[in-house]
Image 1: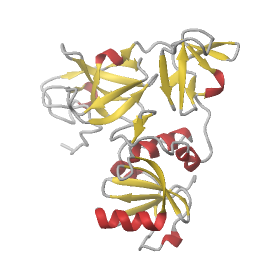
Image 2: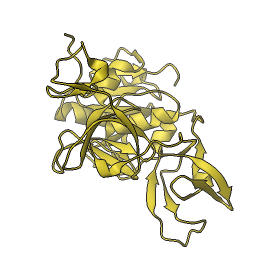
Image 3: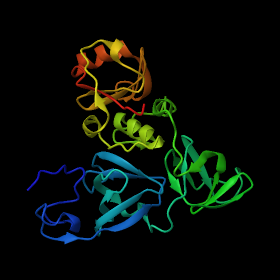
Length: 285
């Protein structure tokens, strides 16, 4: 049997996806059921417990394939966008319905029950959330969940051109382990959301990104070889080179998405953890 990454493999000793039959051992195999996230965000946990660590978040309108829903109200499934596996609250799940047509391009935007900013919002949607727009009314898009300011949306297929500029929009956002929403982001969540906005598929965790993204740039400590858009990897961390003097990253050291002098960041992180392990360059950047 192949050794498969458990973060991306919907398989447990007692239960696995029917698509993994013959690849993994499990007591039973089941076909999953697709659902759409119906909450502004849905924390995904490593275990079905409110005290379990957050591993990632699913955003409004994203889909998940669910293989089990427990009596306690936990759903075990796999996110369709990046294949991450974990536990979600079943209360966050809704029917798939019609496919989304638009996505949120503002850092966050309120959803209203009617076409008025004076109404109490029913939700606060994060950048990247997905909605089905059925029409317009005044300055609002009429969506499957409510009314959203049309200027905060773009067609789902639209892409941005500069993922570094996208990442910079999140400056000041709180650092949140496992976060990828307006509530907070971690280092790899920031990279993933910025690249996805530019139409570039990106895995969830920094070690996955280190393996999957770009071409390796030889780096011996000379910051002069680094270019805007290079991804700098340490064990358990990733940052984005904004320019020859600046690193952009979500870091627990400052508990925020920050700009940090590049040379200072390299020295600080090396002294605290380890030296730079890999630099990757995306040809599209």
